[in-house]
Image (cartoon, rainbow, N blue to C red; front, side, top):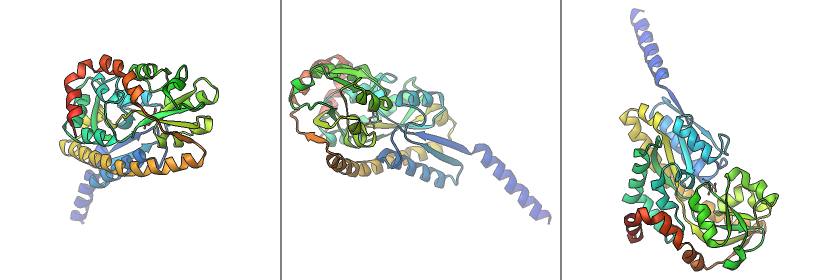
Length: 322
Ligand code: GTR
């Protein structure tokens, strides 16, 4: 009997310790359930829960329920969100070093971007985020494909973009990019784009096919998708530094490992999503317009010169990656 009580007592004490250290990690994304980034981060969460026997609990908040990316970055910085998947675009104003990946035509194509983020330069940028005063830890990269223009009036040649008001993500670099391309760049949150297109506040926006489809922007009237591929912006998974600092070294290693696995899982899901959503958009009557981007490449040279001056060495190394 005494032994039973002692054992029970020990079990209760152990449970108390576990509860004291149990931690719920809130993860957030602007994309809806089923989107590649959401699925990959959920599967990371399952692995974290399993590997820690539930000591780490994981909760996903998809579909912008915790706000737009700018707001979610702020919440991650103060520790209200533990894991955030965001585009690197709105991280630029907070960690200027990442803007090297945010520049127009900095990557030759998606394969080039992947080789860079998977290699030493990718790791260096994650480390720069972690070492910056932004209070976020760079965990892993995700694939955002390439961004092209979608508009209510078709853009078949560069001149067609003249004067069109195009929504860009919140980072002056992108507004400059669109202005250099001949359009009129307007910074706006993702969640406001649908109504802005519908009401004519803007004439279009730019994004990848999965976003164009799942955010329904084509239903607001943007039925022409012009293949400019002017921005190839990797996405990122970050953890709040407040959360990170409380983890044991073993848990930190586990988080990094599962995040890297999520990077690879998301990529497989991504390629399929691009193909699937391209088909769906075409079935909905969206016209895909072939486009020779060289004029836009040339027109954006001053943007690369302005923002890239501080990254001259790094840009040479990026270019050299095969
Ligand atoms: C998507 C990206 C989101 C968000 C959105 C936007 O492609 O996955 O993280 O940045 O674009 O344009 O705001």
